[in-house]
Each structure stands twice: as structure tokens, then as C-alpha cells.
Length: 220
Image: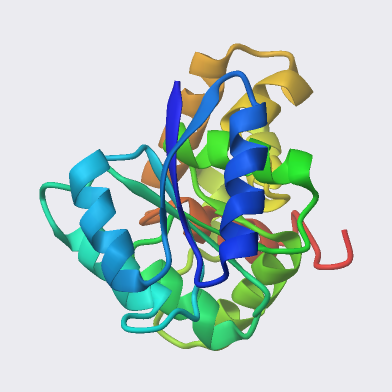
């Protein structure tokens, strides 16, 4: 059972998300937080698998709350999924830097939100498609980011390039396994090898590498 904590300053929104979470057989809500401080406190008390975190909250905003949760050894295993109406780039970068595992907008379809919670709980990263596009554009504009260039793909196999393309399109390991008709374990192995071969720090850099190499384009 995936345990979820909902943090949002609007009671109606918190209630709606909590109700949605509890409709899923494999998810259960374990509390509500109206401020960032409450989110940090409840994360320490409940040790949820995932925190649905709003950005703009009183007392302590969602970015700082995320930073405190992820930095504390007692709650380091808690995954944070940022859910907000704001999609400005600075929020995306700040959230990821703070340790967030995902970033979705509040207009995300309910079924996609539930899927997102499962993806993040499984240890994968998740970015809304529009957010991913802007993140790629920003990272590829920045010099010295350590983003692998197209020439680095020379050491990858055809199958690994297929996997990289799917990672670039925001597919999870489970979805990659289904798309390529391989086992989940094999999909994870390919992703691990790509991280090593391309010198990528995390999955976000693999997405950047896929765009940078021309395997995926923003319009797709």
C-alpha cells in the first residue's frame, strides 16, 4: 500500500486530493497539511511514501518544505511530488534542486495523478510534458552542465538508444518495458547502463541527452 500525505493551503483542494487518493485500491492517504511546516512535521511523524506538495503555502513554502524533508535523514526516503497551478521555470528548477521527485500541474487528469504517485513511489522521476520541454531547453542553453552530447551515443547499442528515446518522451521503466516487450528488470538494466555510458547524474539528464542527440524533439 502506497501511503500519501497531502499538503495544500486550501482545505477543499486537500480534501479533493485525499478523496481521490483513497479511491485507489493501492493508495491510502495518511494526513493533510495546510502549511509547509505542517508538511515537514507530518512527514516525520507518518513517514509517507509520497507527499503531494503545493508550492505556495503560508508559513513555509513547498520548495523549502521539500528541501527540509529530503535533507533530513529520518525522512530522506520520502518522495515529494510537487503539484501546483504554477508552471514557471524557476519553480521547476527550485523544486528539483530541493529534492523533489516529480512536478505536475493541478490540471492533470485524476488518473494521471494517481499514476504519477505510483511512478514516484517506485523511485522514478516524473515531470509534466510541458515542464520537461522547458527544462530541456533551459539545460541545453546552459554551458558546462555536463549534459552528454550526440557523439557520446557512439558507445550505446541500438536497444539502448530505443530506451533513451522513450526516457526522453517521459516514459517510466514499466512503460518502456511494455513498449519494447521486455521485462521490467531488463528495462531498468538498460537505463542503468545509459546513466553510466553517458555520464548522466540522473534520469533528467537522460531526457536532456535524448533531446540533445535529436532522438526526441519538443514537438513530439
